[in-house]
Image (tube, rainbow, N blue to C red; front, side, top):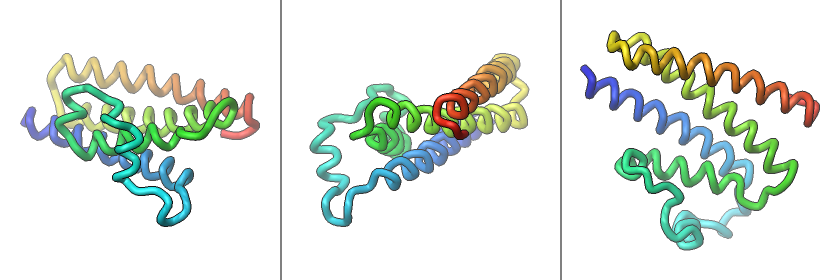
Length: 139
């Protein structure tokens, strides 16, 4: 059961990060034919993350790389707003995963962790939405 939960959590995270990466990659896509995954990795050299869990999951690694590339070329206010929007989506994904964990586990350590994630990241989402509204007139 524990293995099944781990696989589910990793799969959900990969899906969320893939969607987030797809959004940022699509918003910043170059004209057809001017950019390829091969040139992307040549430019980057190695992946930006050296974490063993991410490195073991090719989909997660790719999604994380694409998410970071979505910020390429942005600076100042444009970067700040893109960062806040990306982090809101990222946090909402973590909250959803934690809620699913609560439905799937009875392990006290994981229940406590899930509740902490839900509490902390809900507060951070609210804070970031407030900043988007205050600083950029939207949310």
